[in-house]
Image 1 (cartoon, rainbow, N blue to C red):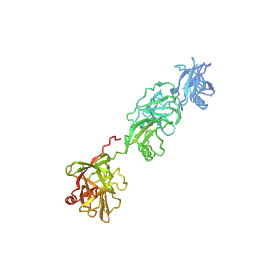
Image 2 (tube, helix red, strand yellow):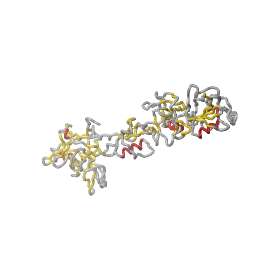
Image 3 (cartoon, rainbow, N blue to C red):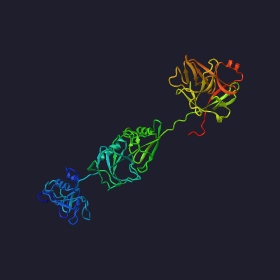
Image 4 (cartoon, rainbow, N blue to C red):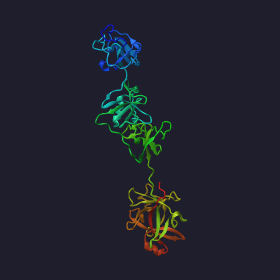
Amino acid sequence: MCTGSPDVCGGSARLTVWQNQGTVSDPDRYSLEGPDSVTNRALSTQVSIPDVTIEKCASACANSGFKYAGVEYGSVLCGNEIHTSANSGLPATDGCTMPCAGNQDQRCGGPDRLNLYYSGPVQVETVGDFKLKGCYSDEVGNRALPIRQYVDGGMTVEKCTDKCFSLGYTFAGLEYANVNCSSAIGSSAVPKTDGCTMPCEGAPNTQICGGSDRLTLYEYTGSSPGTAPTLLETYNDWSSQGCYVDTVNARVLTPMPSALAPMTVGNCVDACEATGYTIAGVEYASKCDGDSHLCGGPDRLNVYKKAPPAPVQKYTIQVLDYQNNQVLGWIARSYNQFGRPTYTEDFAQATTYEKEGPTGTNTVFDLRQTDGSDVTYTYFGAFYGDPQFQHPMAMVQQTPAGSKGAQLGTIGIDGTMDQSCIWSFDPNALGQRLQLRWVNIDDGSITMLNPFYNFIDGVGALYGVVDINTYQTVSPQAKRLRLYLNEVVEENPQ
């Protein structure tokens, strides 16, 4: 019996021991009967208090900075570890029967028996629909729960389970105060009875957050977990390249602090693209802060790559004899001595063009030379000649902004058409047979020019003819042509 009270305070070579878990409202729930020995105490420090009760014992030890409190035969003992030996510090199933002096309804150990209590953080049994599975082993190279997450502020079990739940995972684990999630437990996870001893930063007095190579593991037992993040396959003209390994000391990509918060794949890509990069990666978030897509993970990058510009289709213009469809050659890269286009029989000397004009239509278009020597006059067309007879075909300028009455590819000066580079396809011909349009700048009327090749003063040149019969009468040596637009096939497209 305890001194000053009828409580049981241990006995001969016996301790009554308590485990303090905060406010002791139900002492028997936390009691652990165990043997003790006078010569080898399970708890090393004895404290004298009158009218011993479990509450007084637990409070006295806690106030003195001890984690363990015990009562044995009316005596209070404290310690930060339980000393074990053959006949001390081990669980017992009987002997803790002595009433406490300060509360006859409580048991204060017995002879060589200790009622033991613990004051400190524990592995929380339940958090919402998450249930504790226990303490499990883990390996750095083979994570039991491979999805690493991060939360703001001090870690708690609630923050861990809430984070994993929000991502749609059914397992949540705390290791060394880090959050780990997954929908399955990896092979490195083996139940352990030791090692889960690290207090949670956000609840250091009540919760355990795993330990070194140890997971405090929880499993979701409810019916409706959250939604797991998904991979954003494309963003504008960027596409996912997969998940890549990264390291702090040898970054795969250049850090980009200018990315806007909250983090999304779009914000990351926009920041990289604005700086001129064609590859972007998001890391260290798993789920993006700003949406429900994946944003990498610990030492893992979700990588995106900008698509290269679509190759611009190039064309050559094939020249055929109008009468017999014999191929004469192609419009040449070089010009005649007067700086006007001509044709060549050598395909290697053929010039190339790009079509320009209203998007999505072939009704009218311009033909811009891509490999010519004159950077000012780059459009194949004609300039003003005799409106009833012929217009010399030439390299001209495209319509500048503000030209009077100008349509696509035309320039007007003082109310008169000066030059034109408007082309269309002949709707009555097979293939892409070209027609050069001459547009009256005053009324918008269109005259189709018929291509001819003629020699003037011994120099061959191309002409767009209005009146075919008159022109052939005046210039019988002139050869009427057909012009066809042919696609250039790249030998090694990238």
